[in-house]
Length: 572
Image 1 (tube, rainbow, N blue to C red):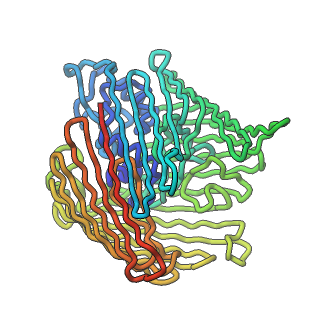
Image 2 (cartoon, one colour):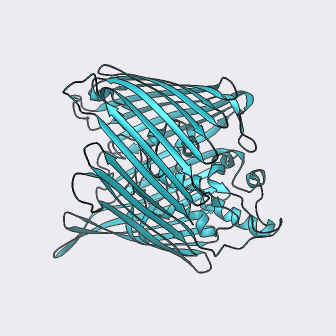
Image 3 (cartoon, rainbow, N blue to C red):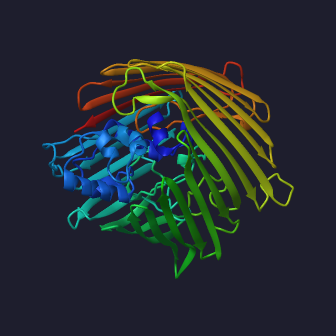
């Protein structure tokens, strides 16, 4: 999870999107083979910008396979900082001699995942997912959440993807993601990430990518085409939706140009709702976006126009270094109240890109001497002793929030986190947040203290959380784990005292790959979980999790819960 958080530039797992976590978790278990996959596969992975894809493809053509992460950091458009973030998700496997380029593999590979979970009340959930890559990629996933009766899946997703025109184009049929610009116009999925660090300010548009996920309820469904020609990328799709017997067709297109100094793009989409005897357009938007890098300074913006409501919206920001040890970012966002938030997921907002004018400032620092992490060697095994982030965000809402009797509403948030390596294995992390708003409970204070010990085999953690809003809420847990060559296990036990729902505390729970669990703890009780994984052989992996939550201090008010989950993954 820390590797995924580092890649997305956030310091709390609770700020991540579930589908992104599932996709990146899959890459952790089966890294992308940079020297073997095609150019379109590099682009659809979501790890690289189109310029990085073009630069890496050109480097492989001229110099052969990349054989070390140091070499990868020298490829134009990469750099040491980015390579440090992407290294856990890629493999430098090479099938040829140094200086030569390996061809795209033609062997068949894929995975089959099945899971089942049972609760104490007899309710069951299950999921089955399969992905196959044999030159043409295909995947399907179906799942059912806890329901009292029946076995019919509640969610089904799948895709078929193929390359044409010698790998410069690809076609996706089925479920796919479309993420362009900074998310102001077209970015399906959830925009839950916070603005806690400079890296989280600027989004990384991945364009079109296939989707088959246990939690992929936000994917589009239809036919999509993407073509790369030199520095230009053209993407187009038509998706279909059915809501309350109303059919909606969603045609969209994007044209982007990528150069060493940055990227420019134009995006347009429209919702065409079909009802008997007529067609109308409830939503249509167009945007222009750019991301430019000048001497280490990133400047990004997106300006959009909502044709239905005849109103513009915009966001703009800059990320810049301040000396060797500090990097900062600032952002302005203008989301008028009449701007439709449909299909948007831009910078963190409480209204999803509507009814909000905001400004943000953040910084991240790394200072002190270098510490080599115990049990680690090679690229990324050395970190600075002191690391941290700080941020401030001010949001003004022209239309007053519910419960605010003023003509408008205001919210101010500050957040700071500091992490110190006490030894080469023991670290201390302190996170402090304060929120003020003019409606509801005006003040919310949060303090989190986290100790972590990690060596090559043993892991132990302790966390203490305090929240004060309506009342004072407390939560604490301890966790220990052992990671072997084949077997890994983790045991967590915690206690919480949260008397008001407004003071609820979210905690990321360790689970099987493909599951992103962040429950909200409320009430007075205890919880515990035992999570284990066993690699039977090179292809077969099993996972198990047993968890319980009880409320011994709330007699008659809330019943406890127990759950057992089993998951099997077969890679071929």
